[in-house]
Length: 263
Length: 261
Image (cartoon, rainbow over all chains, first blue to last red; front, side, top):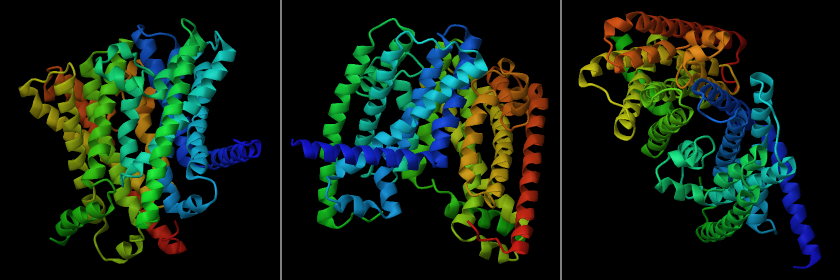
């Protein structure tokens, strides 16, 4: 790929990401999902873990609740991305611009997971300020890398959601449905070992499973964060491929049938 | 007679028109699927934390699931009049306001009961939760009172929605907060005093405590005080909601701000 083209694609992705992060940060709904909801769920986990006395550290709970927020933000943001553009009347514009649709949509889906970073900051700060949680990261540098890769992995998963949910007329209902099952099957708060064996297969193909693994091993020690980071990157590539195929298919069908703007 | 017609028929029509999630393609994932996984998630989290047994989480979350209907449903059924542009014709009609207001609550209560019963079935089918047949009538009575009481809070939010720009922000925050402060997943005794105070002032808290005792083998007379408290709280919220509804109506007429969204 020529260097000028790489620069152009990079500029589209970066400016799109910056634009969508700013837009989403102004949205009441995303503030709710990225800040208030994770703090409430972190508090529930903190109190349950304290009362039960059997569970691990508060940092474990804070990271889990934070990643739950990243997932919610990705799910609702990316799942409804195309529908949302359609309602705003901008879908036709993003389809007809010269860059491929995936280059325009990818920054949006990554932005929805990047906004979820507020959740992790919020739950960590909440734990430190109100629950006296010691914030000691075993591998701070690895933690930062794990965080970036996790957000990227979820953003790419968001691309798959965006390109498949569009086939279902009520994408928001699907988003409502998928919030808890993914929290459960990816082990963000409940260890996978407690769940039936068949659920492990579901968790295995979902980026949050590996993201939380990478974040926890980087923050708490006891393992190699590169396993989680590597799996997140690998799954990210698969999601990109699947998302690209689905988007092409969706665009071709919509153009053929003239149904792009139809809700 | 006119009061009853507005109450039953008007309430049902309003519910069908304004409750966004009534279609099966929306109802099943949102009103049934979401509570199903909520119950599973918190029960497994409970097993991991070791804080209580499965029954604690099944009863807590199954009763709380009625808030899907009571909070969101009631908010939609009142506040959507404004967003759908039907508030002005509605308030221009001579219909009895109390019948119009209360009638909307009845389908919401029925739906809340369906969702809660579904939640109990999830517990019975998939988790370590058992309920003696003899306890069902008592539990049903507690559920009716609790769902009605929670609908009172939903009415209040719906009334706020006649004025607030983004009422669903408030509804979501209230719904999630109830998971924390109403003893759904965290025993009240574990929470700090001020959070316990908030929880006791909200619907669900006393109802969930009563439902847990009944599910554990208690009788309705054992939980009379809890059920009474739950009912009184619901009535207070309902009165506040109706007061606010009338206040906003008068204010909106006076300031010609009825259709401002």
